[in-house]
Amino acid sequence: MAIRNIRKDDDDILRKKSKKVETIDDRIITLLDDMADTMYDADGVGLAAVQIGVLRRVVVVDDGEGLIELINPVIVYESGEQLEEEGCLSLPGKGGMVKRPSKVIVRAMDRYGNTFEVEGTDLLARAFCHEVDHLNGILFTDKVISEESASIIESN
Ligand code: ZN
Image (tube, rainbow, N blue to C red; front, top):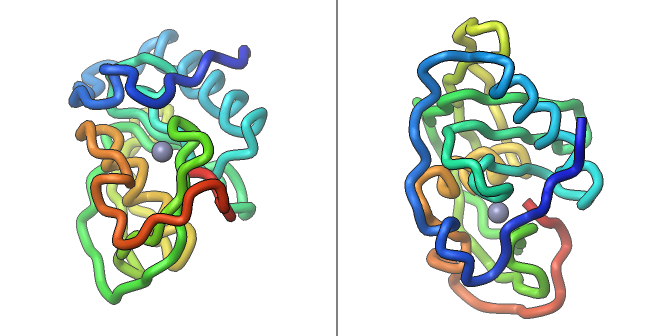
């Protein structure tokens, strides 16, 4: 277990598309463990592998209700709308209002290779959307409706 360096600001890797995980091997397990350590150390709500420089479709999220590990996550359902302030561990000091669905269902694999679905509302729905965007090279600043720099409530 280790805390890894979070890629920030205009680091090119944040704009790259992450590749699907084909085999869950020891490297992926270590990656999941390190991502959780890194997220908790940085006080984040979520972290995508690309944020520590690994272009794989792996995400960790914890909205305060426990750790959720997602391998190859896909949003299979979304409904409603919420407009809240968002931030990102890769964009320190930046914040802004972003529109997201108020409820989503994500399908993913766990570390044992089992496919599962998890529902998220409010902050958890926002975190799922934000992290899946990271896997496609999309940052929240691409979707900001109004900017409020340096007044971040939460970092995803
Ligand atoms: Zn982020």
